[in-house]
Length: 103
Length: 164
Image (cartoon, rainbow over all chains, first blue to last red; front, side, top):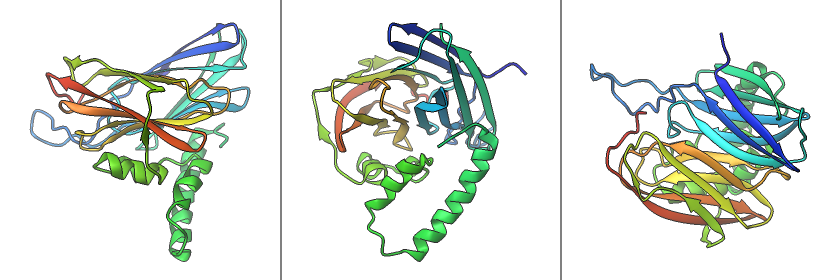
């Protein structure tokens, strides 16, 4: 299966700007479907970004993050061609991981 | 925490949570303020904080201290969100030594939306998209140099959408 994670990491001098878009339903557990049944909670709880074996950004998420979540941040110390590793784990224990080259 | 193998890490977290619970029962006389510090050190998912129903309870559970409003915390949020399922919110700050940032929506069923841990070398600037059930105050918390700062803004929601 194709990765659920799409990342763009672009280097601008010493600063690397990272944008990530993840495919995930992010069901909060407060919404009912057309039949009036509650859709059980299903959302990403933790998302981490690693550069050179070091954690550069970590998100703890609840069900209040929008479907197909987007996040943007920036960090120092990386250069073009370096790899960035992105991983998430959801409340059902599902995970996905990908690596992206910094451009 | 090293997360080379996320699957393994998730399992380990469950085990650690179990162990933590046992330890807490065993050490019932630990000062309450110690718990959030331990959680941060272990990069553990703040399960309890995400269940809280008010800003004050989230702040207490997550940080164990009070937040002080600061004009150095800049929140960028729309005045009116036409679709509550996708509300773009970002924060940046000129404060030094930022270690974490959190987003809170007062009127949502669960107030805490997200907490971002900012290691040294990462800029204190985060953008994300959140769900809002209805018109509400949105608060961002910035933990910097061991202190907690905040900024708030009301965002009007024309179509609620905690569902997405």
